[in-house]
Length: 182
Image (tube, rainbow, N blue to C red; front, side, top):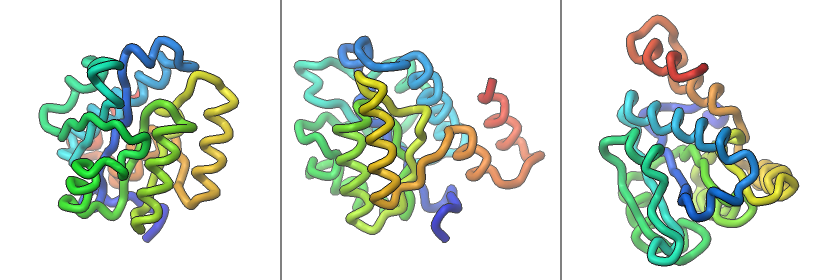
């Protein structure tokens, strides 16, 4: 059912959180905070996770503070802007067969938007964590989120994603995830 996250059907995708890019990104501290919360949630709930970099040789490694929160996960370096145009990433996602993908990353109006578009084209329900995506310009974020919504993505707050994945309170897992929200 669309609009209802299912932990058995979801994959988290972290797009291009690279420090060389981050310094120019609007509200980067808030974006990294929420991406970190999503990463910790993936670890607690054992959700399959993908981390991408854009041309790592020139732009550097994935942000260690976020990446270190997940003990597993798959790491890919890409040259295409859309993750789905990278053969290795596309093959990995095809292998995992998620019905839903939660996306966060930078830049919202380029790599995130194009990835969301291509995931939707594959028939995958996409959930964009609006507080964990950004671009260099605030307006580019707003327009990208609007366009992703028009394409059919569900745009949500990280906190909504967490509570939807943990739809029953009182469990140890829910309590661990709830502690991430400050």
